Length: 288
Ligand code: SF4
Ligand code: SF4
Image (tube, rainbow, N blue to C red):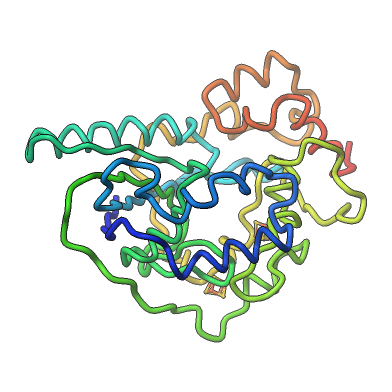
């Protein structure tokens, strides 16, 4: 786990960037991104008397691989749903702070709409935001969950680090749908993650044949990033790849019944796309 701390204040640098991204409709049907515009940019509107944003990273890089002849799901979804796993850890941390220091008020956030987690992690020196728009931490890469505690306690603050993308363009070159429209700009509405998870309707024919084997999310722009050569397997038992999922080959994916889906993905983030959504994603690949 990595930790960095920033003063809870208006995110001046991010404001025009977020506005521009929304104006260009790069959030597609993710309408919730339009909500809480002010709260997203100022944590003091989210938590009374907020003084500090404590950003935390938790590694999810898996030691296991899915079988070779399988459809792929994003590595972050191999184990149990991270929202619950991390929320418990954050609560524990807040209780620890309260036990050590006294009355400290605050709230925990995990991948939650109103908090720009990557911006806070960057501001707190946990990494830089790469051309693929992921937070990259030197020596460990980008296969990390980001979470925050926003608390009413003043602390010493960290500062940002340098951007080490340099002249590399591997993520831009590898993205099969051209979703990284320019360095540091990902058009969410063109990303395989969006099509396979967020989109509720039919996937447009224009992207047919571009998904490879991805049926839930996509890791391509992280897999090709040279900084992920440093990724080390996580130590979190809850993130272990479910053996039933690990051994699912393509044929078995096609045969998944609603009951098998429920059983395999009972505690998983894959539930988010739903049974019908998963079947849509599999059939979009056009294989039998
Ligand atoms: S996750 Fe996949 S589709 Fe989305 S930007 Fe990265 S490479 Fe492109
Ligand atoms: S692949 Fe290269 S350009 Fe893309 S995020 Fe990684 S280092 Fe940066």
